[in-house]
Structure formats: C-alpha cells, structure tokens
Length: 297
Image (cartoon, rainbow, N blue to C red; front, top):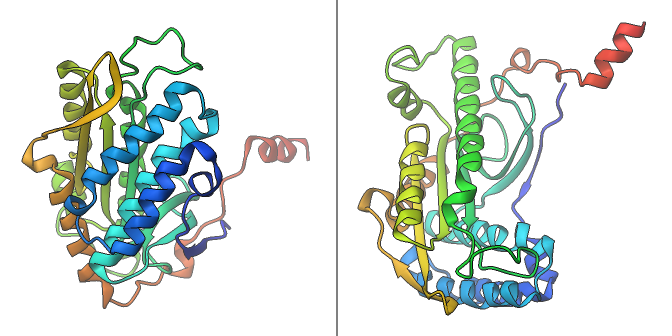
C-alpha cells in the first residue's frame, strides 16, 4: 500500500541557501512582510528579481542546481504565499497521493492535507539567458516555449489521473459526476475535483516564442481548471537581462486566474475533508525489480 504523507508547505532550500538566488530570496522576504493578496501587487518586483537572478545566471554565478530549481521554486513559493494570504488558509505538500493509474503522485501545493485532494497547483518558470553552461545558445537566450511541451504533458496527465481517481472514489460511495468523459472531455474535467491550476512565468525572446507560449497555455487549459501566464522579454539582445512585461490574453492573465484559484480555496476552507474509503486504496504497483524477484520464486 502506498503511504501518503502531508505537511504544511515549506519554502525552497535552494532559494534560501544558494548565493545566486539572493535576489529571489530578498524579493520573497519582502513579500512575506507585505502580505500581498493579488499578483498585481508583486509583479513589478518579480520582474526585477528575475533580472537580478538571470544576471547571475548569465555571468556564471549560478550553478546547475540554481538553473534547474531556483527560479521555478521561487515562483512556486510566491504564488503559494499570495494564495494563502488571499484565501486565509495553509497550503500543503503531499506525497504518495493515489491517482487512477499511478498510486504515488507528489503534489507540491495542494489542499486539504487529508482525504481526497480538492485543489492542486503547478508552477513553471521557463526561459533562460545564455550562460557559461550553454555557450552555443543565441545571445538573447533560450526561448521560453522550448521547455513547455513536456511540462504541459506531465501536468495534464497528473490532472486527468487525479480527477479520474476522484470519480472512482465517488462511484464507490454511490455518487457520480453529472457528466462522463465519454462526451466533452474538457467539460467533464471541469466538473470533477480536484480544482487543478497551472501557472507559467515565461521569459520570451520573440513574437514567435510568445505566441508558442500562449498556444501551449491554451492547450493546457483544455485539461486544467485554470491556466495563468506571465510573460516578460529582454529589451534587446544587447541587454538580455533587462526585462519589460509583455501583455497576455485576458483569459490567461495570471492575476485573473490566480484570483479564481483563491476563490476556489475560499469555497473549500470550511468544507470537511472527504475521506478516502479504505477499500479504495489498493496495493502499490510492483517495480520491475520486484516483478523479477517474483518470477524467480
């Protein structure tokens, strides 16, 4: 049986300890003191923090761990902070959460901390300037859209898997969603918990790159309850870490979608957790090594 774990969400150790992440840490600490409840309150400071961090990336101060986790962890922590202030609750990190197909999803930001998951959030920060670890990259840097195809697919599958498991659990209790996945998949997904949100902060390097990010976001919106994006771009190839904001379609506005996520959490705040029936939790799937040992007996 897969053992579930849950704890109040904690902030990134990478951001808290790594020298290259100092601008991100300073901006997050300032936000903690300010208690923001909307994205609009922090977006300008977010862009300035991105400039300072990416300058560290471009100069080689950042190592591979900073590149892989620093910006994404910071974005994740900042969104969580805003939602907690807005909705008046704590978000949690849960491990070993069962889906319909996979029995051990790890959820960085979720609610509640027990029973059936009712809310999930995924945050992705994409696009980097050219740096010493990628010397062949164009001077303006790596497109934000270059990293999104795989990430959107992963998030989409997780959302579908968790929603399908919720439907199975409700069926075991004699309940069922009003619609079924045999009709319009998007309509069914929107009718079934958990509420599933994806937020993307993208450093875009051209109009084509920006349009690709928007297209990926609209694709993700077919299986997510909400997708919000925030885009920024270098002022010029000669100033690759000096940024300006880029306007996005209203339906993808990070501030608008984050507000919707807050309202979902407010609605859940006073609801009792939905217990997972004991018979709904099956054994953890065997690994390849376990299967091989079983064949030898």
